Length: 246
Image: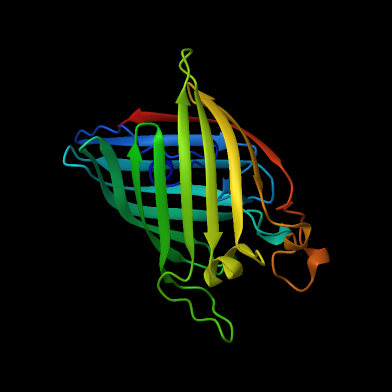
């Protein structure tokens, strides 16, 4: 599922460390009061429902699909994001790794479809990840030409297991690049940070970015027509997710 290969939409830390595999199909479901992706809301600070189906082989190969509602302005309240991905994950010499490709598909209201290649390594409770823009199919305007690596996201995560069975996650990420400005509407490179706690599928997170209040217009000329995304404000996110075998 998407949360296996990217920052968790709810809790924000990577889930690649210590993963084991078997030839099996599984499904996942999640709900939260906000869909946060790399520190930015993808649902104009409203609730999101998501779900996906995955296949994992004992060789380390996996593939899957994941979908969620998204919203970027008041007129596309029922837009969707549909992701498809495949990759290979495993362990070697005391560390775990995960590499793959992720394709983000949106409905016509969003105007963008794009793909990324990603990779992460984990040693103990630390993990380091990098995602690079691989291809983009936006409804391109004059002067827009997004090529390979025209955006990147670098993340560093640390997970603290507690005796109660809960896990605390610490996350820092850096997002940059021309495509990121156009897709996310940010006017500058930025850092995002979050602290989360999760147990038995329930999670809570505090997240913020280094963006200023001038980024809330998301790059459009008519700022007044856009709902506030509060990119410069601290956000509190709670959610529940579950996985089950098929």
